[in-house]
Image 1 (cartoon, rainbow, N blue to C red):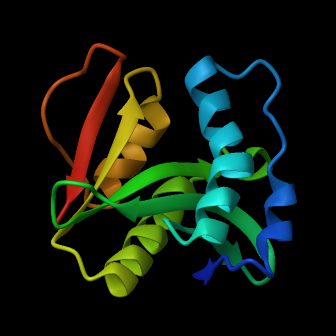
Image 2 (image 1 turned 30 degrees about the vertical axis):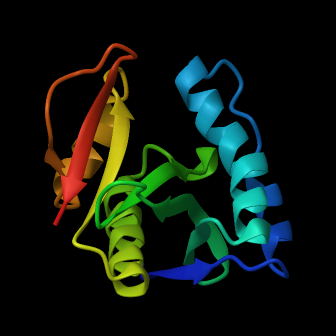
Length: 149
């Protein structure tokens, strides 16, 4: 398996149709899916942020959106989603690592920050495997902050 990042452009946004709502997903997961399907394309079109696909050959494994943090020399990973058909196969950490490397290469920031819901144990493990370090405790909304230098 060799994952590679594919930057989304206005011409390739149609590929986000691969995101289908997960039936019975917790609200925080549904919010991520909704953002990637609606918010990320708007960001790309307005040039206020970026999005990318993590692909294996031409198969979409994961989708991510990010933008420059307003206060720090950092990039904020706003959303990261392994598509439902690829979950439970041990691909999340590798897909996240591919995403983080791509963001570091394109953004030129000191670090990347992202949030993971406290109930999302799979993403917490993937974040640690991909080199993310927990930064602080659970916030009022139930999210843990991660950062990668």
